[in-house]
Length: 302
Image 1: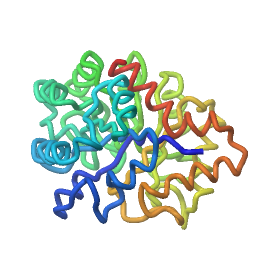
Image 2 (image 1 turned 45 degrees about the horizontal axis):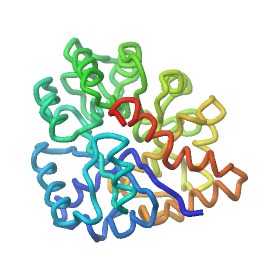
Image 3 (image 1 turned 120 degrees about the vertical axis):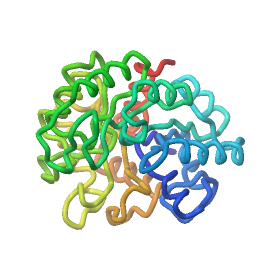
Image 4 (image 1 turned 180 degrees about the vertical axis):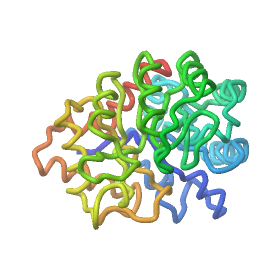
């Protein structure tokens, strides 16, 4: 079984910029040569950590250099067209709205440039909300609420990974339709502040959204392996999450991965292990691709 892959979060652009590496082939977790072993392959590339335009231009350079293997996509239909052409369907995300100055105008500009997901905060509170890393009880500000509403009006996926728990519930109450936690695991299995409580995941399920399983070892457990990753999936599945579990591997955003995983090329091992454990092919396909693409279709268009 040749697996598809739609991953909700990687930080490869940041690492490319830091190390002067190319997207075609590199020594990082993700490159086109390895990713295109999956068919189809779609990927949200996060822009974070510095000026938005620096990494946006870097992506545009990668697009120009790899036009036969890479396509910027804004809708599910464009991703389908990229797949038919044998290309990576690249979607752009912003991680931490502070790199847009938490500005409604800059959000609209980023949308026009192709951004289709925004993680409201990163590891530091901003003008929109507190974060779960700092353990703050600060939820969405007045500007944060307006920003979330503007995301929904534009057709930008709201990502609640990294946000404070009060901010999560504020966003969940405001949004009418799916939202995502692009790279977050189950707090019931590993009580890290970056992981989701059962109540939070239940809210994502009710909204029709997804949680992307994060492969960063610090969010999985002590000395994790593939079965540990699957345990986080199974916990969410037991909460009614068959259509709400996806992958958000956080590749190139972490320095420790589960045993057996060195980069994107090894994600097939996870799918194979799921099949060995009697997951149906349909469920594996949903987790690896269909669930996240449905959210893109619902919010960003077909």
